[in-house]
Amino acid sequence: MTDKNKIASWGGNQSFAESLLQHLAVAAFVIDANHQVIFWNRACEKLTGLKAEEVIGTSNHWRGFYPDNRPCLADLVLDNHFSEGAELYSKTKLMSEIDGFAAENWCTSADGVKRFLEFEAGAICNDAGEITAVIECLRDRTKQKESEKLITEMAFYDSLTGLPNRRLLIERLKEEISLTNRQGNTGALIFLDLDNFKTINDSLGHDVGDELLIQVAQRLKQATRETDMVARLGGDEFVIILGQLDYDMSTAARNIEKVAQTILNDINNPYEIRNHSLYTTPSIGITLFPAEDDTPGILLKQADAAMYRVKESGKNSIHFFHPAIQEAADSRMQIENELRRALRSEEFELYFQPQIDTNNQLIGAEALIRWLHPENGIIPPNEFIPIAEESGLIVEIGNWVIESACKQLARWTGDHLEVPQISINISPRQFRQSDFVSRFDHTLSRYKINPDKLVIELTEGILFDDIDDTISKMHAIRSLGVRFSLDDFGTGYSSLAYLQKLPLDHIKVDQSFVRDLDQNPNNAAIVETVINMGHNLNLSVIAEGVETEAELNFLKQKKCREFQGYYFYKPLPMEQFEELLSPNVRHSKNKSLH
Ligand code: C2E
Ligand code: CA
Ligand code: CA
Image (cartoon, rainbow, N blue to C red; front, side, top):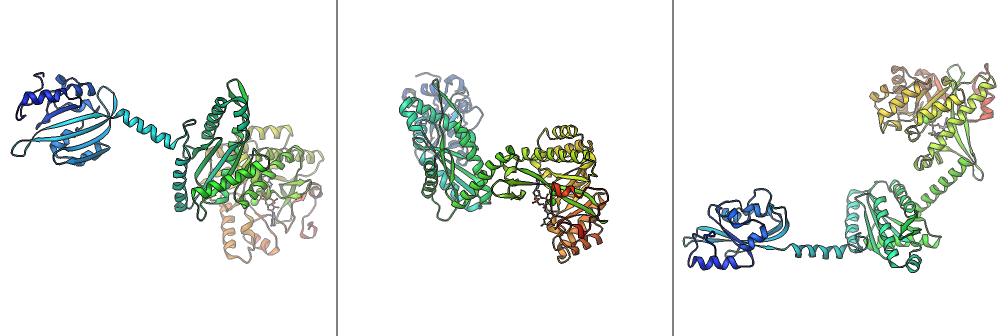
């Protein structure tokens, strides 16, 4: 026993009690009624790294457990402040009136060591029942805690890849199902199975097989969001939960298809394993939720069944469980593939729809793309432009449109024909390309185009993203001499403030407002407002989709002076449009071609 440990108020045989505590294997210390340390045993020195002489007579005992000054369990017992215990410890409990309180928590002591400690503190009272001291005992449970963690990990995670296992997947899937049910959005379950794993495993050995699974796991993690879950069911089967997707199921399905396509491509890339260059492909089945009576078991079966369809029909592909979604995906994929072919074999053509003024003069034409499909005939743009936009093919198609329009303009000029302004449609995705302006400029110079003859039609979609970039690109093109028209005006959400910032020359009243103008008072009011607004902004206003004389008369009455629509002409193939290109042709109803 050392005389630095003085337990002054200890009743009975003081030195015996001190000696007893000193020799205990369990770390213990005692504070008096003023929070001053009066005893600190050797085990406590060992556990906390603090020597008894550093703390005896001070109230610094917290340094043994925390980097900042905060009360220890003994202090809380002394002050009767147990409500604080819940904040400071992960678990606190009253053992009994006599034994006092127990708590546990991760602690980082002043010397920087992190330990999981179990604390027990009990009051020592005098005969009058007043607390004269508090004793606190400490146990280091770090090893036990870590092995507990390992056991949970083993129960919920796959030891080879570190991915969640089936158990954790099912827990999470339950949560996602109820979340999507509550919020009304969509989730997806993707089932992925490698196509030739068994061959690789059997021929190159399990070590190579294991390494391949680890790399596949990494690629799957990379292809998905932090919030998605990639799990390994066992063997070469992986499952991915994509949560919180679009409210509209078919929009969600298109996004999922993109993710699945990325996964498919990533898994197809070569693997370098122990001097082997390996290839593998996946079969991917997808199901969507929520649907009635969804359970994790049902969804897993659906995704598995969809995956099996891929195996049956040649592997290395994607299949949706729901037939309608699969059909839509099939036709999109087919159109996308055919579009690539169409670009190579030049199956596109530009039609030209004349634009007419109040004197029946031809003042311009809109170039509209047509796809002359070798088997299916003419496919209108509404059936392929949206797919081209999604797949990014629109950029190449758009380049073709610019190129063809310029080529045509140059030809007509060479043939000494009076050429009106030609409008071309540019999709937002193409306009956002960083080299759009320079490419466009380059094409104009290549064909020596008079920029006065070109108008670019943009939709309000251009305003959704990076508006500053849009404005600066528009100015750059405007300074080349090319003009802008805002297409489908009134269908988007553009504010007047934005419109004023854009270097526009024309707005096109959307055809949905022109329809039944003379009979539909709502449309009439909108059209009148748009015409006035355009004129106030000094823009020329062209009405498209004019089909009847009544619509035309209404528009004229409201001071609209430019028109495009079936009443005058449908979009015409180049040769027919060319017939209109002589200086003195009058474009009256009698001469229109339909
Ligand atoms: P848009 O730019 O609004 O083109 C006008 C559409 O209205 C054209 O359909 C045209 O044929 C049609 N139209 C014109 N007058 C009338 C009419 O009086 N009644 C009716 N019912 N329709 C009329 P189209 O050619 O099928 O084009 C549809 C859409 O496809 C275009 O709408 C445009 O958004 C897109 N598109 C067409 N060509 C291109 C292109 O070269 N590039 C891009 N990015 N998109 C294009
Ligand atoms: Ca247009
Ligand atoms: Ca339009």
